[in-house]
Image 1 (tube, rainbow, N blue to C red):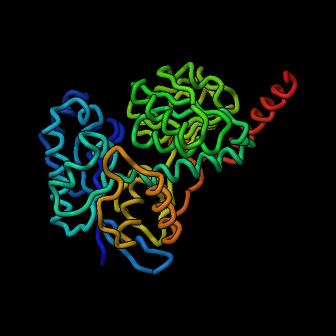
Image 2 (cartoon, rainbow, N blue to C red):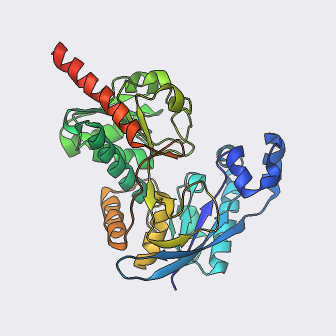
Length: 364
């Protein structure tokens, strides 16, 4: 049987309770110090993932690297990389033939290259399938809302990052106009130039999130900043695909802006009868696309470094999307703020899209 492992970590103190219930109510400073002392460890044994094309079943493991996002980004880089590699060594001992990097384990350092060099098994970040499903989800949600991409204004936040850059290049082929947003203007210019060569049209560039998205119909956000999209920044009828972990959209948008649709990017249904033996916050048979990429590569027997480094190519995205369809992976509907999106939510936002289109027609 083909085997895989996937690295996970808590995203915040609330999420940490799933890893270790005894941390509930503890001060963050104390919790972080305890996590620093903890070694990486096996969390669960995963069974029941089965290809709908071949009927083949695979097995794997979740392995925890017990650090919070801010610890990954602020602690000594050598120490953090050591913890991640420690998790990879556990995967090797378990018999995994490929290792998936979840959350911030794929962000620190050189996006997987150093980790792969220190292990005897290949590595993937899952970014290619995350991009594929984000694009599929955003375009399908736009269709259901009545937003025509060919006449839409779009924005990509985090457009200089490995996920945002490819989303921007793919979205540029679908929409009327595009604004790219990132903190580093020089890196952003390079992305804009590549899109200009690809489409013949130069996107607008900006370092200001609020200003850049006020008129956007479609927004894809893929940063590691967390809660940078605020309720007052969004136009009625806007669609936001939040690919980031932690999420880029402030949680109060869920309660204060029912006239916009926020969907989580990269949520998929896994074929077979998957049993993750661990509650990571999703219903049965549902996983994040970054996890699913590891499953897909294992089912295909494609044991090679796949989505590592900052230079993900559109060809990789198209390849993993094709393999996903082959083995029976599919979008799992829409989720927003950890809850399924209801039909009445879509209809409510769709009405605001209609009003916006009518007002635009009147003023023309």
